[in-house]
Image (cartoon, rainbow, N blue to C red):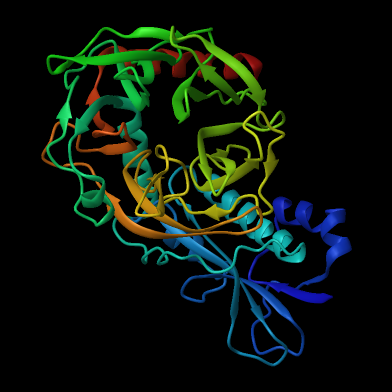
Length: 443
């Protein structure tokens, strides 16, 4: 098959992808960045949701670091002589961060779309509306504001619970009446709550505010407060997101360990011991691994950090929890900064399967996008957006919410607010000065 590839300018990322032997064996690409429909050949064109080519002059600058901090891009196909496009693939990426990183992310996703289309692994049109048009401050000014915000502020997270019903949440009624357990800033915070079935306790991440790495701890509610944390997993490496799943009398736990190949399924014993039972992806770095069962098969939802930090959803599956684990035929199954990354355990009600995902467009963990999974097989995945759970702007944690779980009686969440912390600010300034001195010495 001969295809004209358009809508994208040349770059090192694009050139490297075009020289990939697997792509060359699947399709013959004629790289013509400025081609537009109608054309006498089959055309694959990279466009925004509004139909503008990605290489339109000034387009990247209009989107970079401007609200809603998300840009939807598509790979569309024009048949010879046609003017109407068919969407082969679609995804939404974040626009915050350095300008060069944004441009690189666009090129990487564009060429992933092209490769997957050539190999028959395209995801098709997304089931969620595209990102809205950019607005607000110019990108350079908003980036400057965000840079100084990151230098002087830090995140403080806390656990909360609420007795609202499953039906209220899935019907769009939202979360209310949340009891926050640690609203005051201390030396470390708790986040990523998951129930420890049969014990009334909660597993979570305990993260130092300044130096150190996260560890997995267990807490319980006593008289409206949380008990002192008891260590479950603390080995000198960073651990978080201790996803749990009960299967009969056995409780499994899959903590996040983002070192390559470190994701493991554990059996959680009654005394808190974690016994590894299998590796999931020996060559991958996976964030927020979420274990669940559906239609007689074991599944693991995660984000592949080699593809992006917050914008992709990947799936692995296995006949038995001990493996072997296989990647889904489409990897990733979804690209969307507004809800791809896992935000807690999947749950079902009324025969419907729901998946919470993190909206990380405006900030990490800005909100939770709740989806209903409508198709889940080894080769197909589709989900639709049900509702978005946003933090209470008038409450003690107005800046983020990024975990939603249910322990059988109530929901547990975590909330974020930005705080000014002089110790952390000093730590940042010292580290920055040390890096500058090191660079000067090398130069």
